[in-house]
Length: 212
Image (tube, one colour):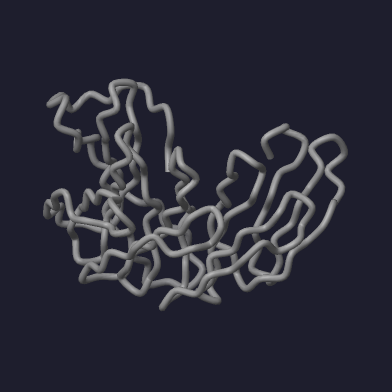
């Protein structure tokens, strides 16, 4: 939470939990289907999170629902919030969605693959995200639409994004690890970090400011 007194945890039991940091007691719980990723917190304390029931939720700090908006597929990513309060979220229906803090739609952008990675916002408001079509996208919000700025083939859908101190973006590519034995734990193989942003060409990462 904004005041540091509450943490929000989604679980596969169909609830989002609010836990007091002082004593780890539950303050409230909110009904939703499986919540895979961490929620995002707005400037006013609103909790935004996606669920396997295909909805993006906005929940007030007291646990009451403000609004929900349906997408065409499960949401397995963490939303990103712009400086103006716009909420961006990816869905497995191959689309990036934008909603105002009041829940009003502010555009969608369609790719050719399921979206499971969380979007990252650049300093200029550009939205960066990867797709199951193995492309990396940069999309600009403008006049209620999401317009393509550029896209690049990256050859993988397994990566994390970091925003560096100079606002360049870096990605860590990871090979998909597959096990033939049920229940066997597999550790992904991580390749060297590569710069995605145009400002730097080094392969040595700066210390990340925000990680997704």
